[in-house]
Amino acid sequence: MMKISTLFLAATLSLSTFTAVKAQTYCQPNTSSGGKKWAHANSQSFYSLKVSSVGNEVFTYTDEACANQYNWIQDTQGFSVTAGKEIVLDVRSGIWTWDIQVGFDWDGDGDFEDLQRAFSTLGKKPTQQETSWNPKYKDTYASADWRKAEKERLGHRGVVYHQFKFTVPADAKAGKTRMRILCDGDGGTADFEMCSPVGYAGSMHDFGITVAKENVVVKPVFDIVDGTYKVDQMITITSATPDAKIYYTIDGQDPTATSGTLYNAPVKVSVPEGTTGKVTLKAIAIKDGMQTSDVTTAVYTIQKAWSIVKGTVHPTENRYVTSATTDKAKQNLNFTQTEKPSMVY
Image (cartoon, rainbow, N blue to C red; front, side, top):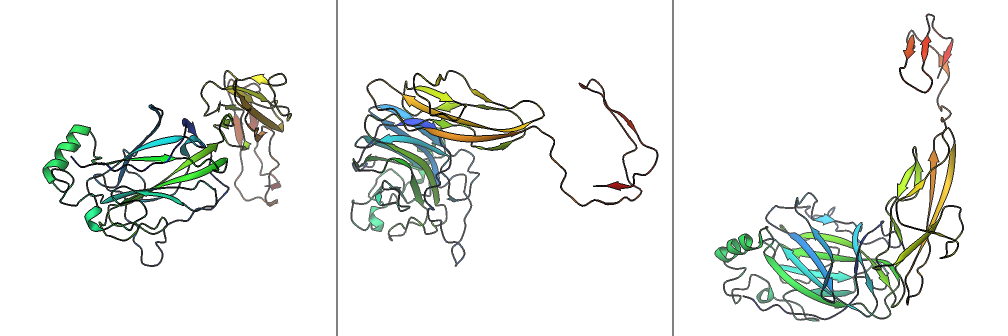
């Protein structure tokens, strides 16, 4: 079995659902100038990610269906880390992947400056002899029989495996940022460019990261983003800090442990029937021995009033409603019309 090189870095994590990272515009592969946009192949490219810290598994993701094209830019899946702590990433890819590279943007500037490549020496340009398909890895990736056996052993298509270790810098910028995983399908010797199209059977996946400072509770996350809705909404609130208590308000005031309501079930955001109004939901997370989180705020517009029709009033043609009835409504309709109306929207 091949020797797995380990590269060191770090973080305390928690599983979380992420809203989109909007602070930076991250580069995307340029496929408009000759670059091909290969589709995911079932037996190839990125397969799964497992993140652990202090021996605990805190995040998992499996790209079972391979439904996405390899240029997959997103950040709705992710996890939280704490500055100065270590994280371990278990990355698996398909049988035709030559190499894997992981990058983090710890300072939030939109670039992935903290990079590790699976089969190369840190800080040096990799050679073809350092790829996963180097024949020196006896009875491993270069062997079709080994790949078949490994696929059966693991119970899925992912057979290229590498473990990365990162340490979150102590001065990492608090808040939302990204991690990117590239799986190379070409087997070339050039350095990975985090924004360039990868080769056939390659893939690119992004994950959202929230960086928290030591002893600061991770701010709450709402599962429904703010916006306009036609019906009442039930909002689930979570914090990536284990055992943190969440307090919320719906009157626009910043919550505290004494002025807020302790969260223990989804929060109903509503307005009276037949009206339209705005509800401001705010939440904080608190844990003994840690600094209280920042406030998370969302404004929901609930539109239950009839909207004024916007359109052109014009003379009618011979097309109009002649009858409309309802049954078992609060107030039933029993409408008939035998003559063409003079004007309609």
